[in-house]
Length: 405
Ligand SMILES: [Zn+2]
Ligand SMILES: [Zn+2]
Image (cartoon, rainbow, N blue to C red; front, side, top):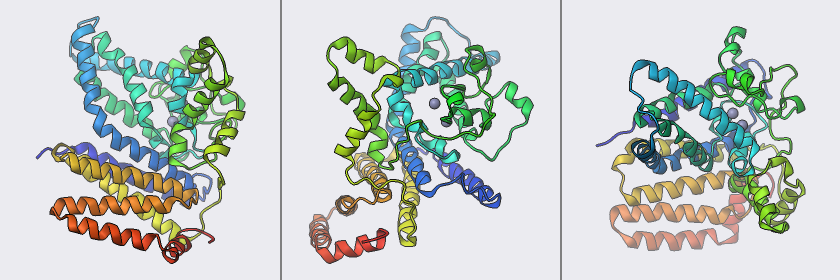
């Protein structure tokens, strides 16, 4: 049996989240947590953690390949190298992050991290798999320089964990710490859309890169968190892909290869802001914007889904080495559809009904496979179709879940 203890990062994350939530309640800081946005943040993070299980080994192999074939220096594995490696990792991060804001192709992945208009621990989870891929390609610089891939992997765990703690408004770090480290206040400035805070504080662990490259800004006025042009959508798919769709539309509207390349590799500021509105009309008709969720049954239903996905993800991560193809396929499909479902619930979409059918079919399909009985699948599939396609059942479902039907 192979167990992955990395799975325990999931419950640890939820424990810190609960602590921050309770502290926010006690301090009467109602501006810190917004239910819908927290669910949206968690959905994105859970999807990334799931997909990461499938790609992390390939990245380690890529690091080894780069190291074995192209390493410039033969860097020893001594104690002082860990310190140099930590500094080098943070420097690579600075430029990866900065280019993530300055080049459309990378901003399309990183924008998701900035969509939240709240700033709390759930925002640290807003990392997509596309961003993880871009980030790992940047990390290849480290084995290319000659750092041992195993050391790189270890330092990345520490580096990644640190950034979780900088996504909070409740921890006030002592002033002297800000001379060396990125604190929640410094990273909060990075998440703000106030004019003076734009494109500032790219550092993850150390603050001196920003000071060195002229991008440092101290927190003075109260930060307004989120994008300068808020997305106003909780759709799981839209949050992930809207910017790439906007880029594709901008490329379609322009002529000549040079102009198209300028869009792909140019500054996000050059992208026409009207494009998003026209795409929203096409792909998000009848958008329900920022309607707070009031109905208790709705919240209960949604909370159960998030907790079920987190628990399932914990089990999948823990037992990943022992799972066969069917286990991985059904659990991943179930998790991803549930996360799309959560976004559709927040946006009060009626087509969610069909997603629910797919989810039930996945569940019965997996049970049938486990017990090697396809009669169960055939019977349950017919029952699900008969039940769900009848109007009273649909109406009952929508009445329980949605605010008004
Ligand atoms: Zn950023
Ligand atoms: Zn952040």
